[in-house]
View (cartoon, one colour):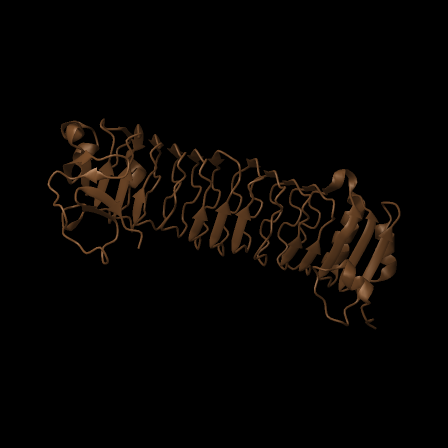
Length: 400
C-alpha cells in the first residue's frame, strides 16, 4: 500500500517532482557497503529513492540495479559522499533504454562524473549537476535520448569525448571555465538547435557537433584558432560570426551545411579538404589575404556558387585534382595575371580585378558612385539582394 510523502522528503528532493501518493524510500548510510542489504529489505515498490551518507562503488552498483529492475523514476543522492568526490564509472549506465529513472540529483560536493555514468538511459530527463563538478568523463550522458537540457556549472574545467553524443539535447552552453575539451562532445544530437561555446580553448575538436542536423545557432569564442575535421559537418548552419583568431579550417569542418555567404576572418591561412564541400546554397565566399593554402575540394559540390573573392596578392597554393567552381573569381588588380596562370584558380569561369580599399572593403575599378551592384556587376536593390554588394566601390555583405 502506498504511503503519503512527508514534507521532510520534499525539502530533501527539490529537483524531483513526484505525486503526493508516490512511495519514497530513504536510506541513511553510516558506513559504506551496506546499501545492498538495506535495499533488499526495503522491497521493490519505491517510486523515488533518497540516499544519504557514505557510498562506495558497491553501493552504487546496488542502487543502479534496484532502480533499473523496479519502477524508480526519481533518485536523490545529494547528501551522499563518494571516495574522492567522484561518481563511479558506469554509475547508472548500461542499464538499457528502458531504465525508468527520469530525474537524478547528484551529490552536493561532487567533483568528477565518471565515464559512461548515465549512458543509454532512455528515460532520463533531468540531472542536477552541482557547482562543484570540475570534470565530466567520456560518454557520460551519451544516448540519453530524453535528455533535453543540461546546465553545466561555471566551475567545470574538463570535458572528455562524446559526453552528450546521440543524446536528446536541444540546446547546450559550455562555460568559459572549461580549459580542456575533447572531440565529439555533442555529435549526432538530432534535436540540438542552439550551441554556445565559451570555453577557454584554442581548438574545436574533431566531430564536435557533426550530424546535428537541426543545429541552426552556433556561438564560438573569438580566440579559436583551429576548427578540426567534421566539427560542424551536416548541420543546418547558415550564418556564423567567425572567430577573429581563426587560422585553420580542417577537413570537412563545415561540409554539408547551409551557408549562403561566407566572409572568412583576416588570419585564416589554411583551408583543408572539403572544408565547405556540398554547401549547396552557397553563393559567395571571401577568402582573406592571409590565405596560404587551400585544398581544391574545399568548395566541391557548391553548385550554386556565383562568385568568390580571394584577397591574397599571391595565388594561394592549391592541392588536389578537383575542378574549380564555375563562378566568377575576384582578385587584386595586381594579381590578375598570376591567378590566370595558377593551377585551379585559372579554371574559374572568369577572373576579374578589384582594388583593395582597406580592411573593410574593396573597390571595383568600374563601379559607379551611387548605384548598388551585385559582385558580378548586376544592379540590385539593397532590400532585395543577399550576399556581397558593391556601392561607390566598397564591398558590403547583406545579413538579411
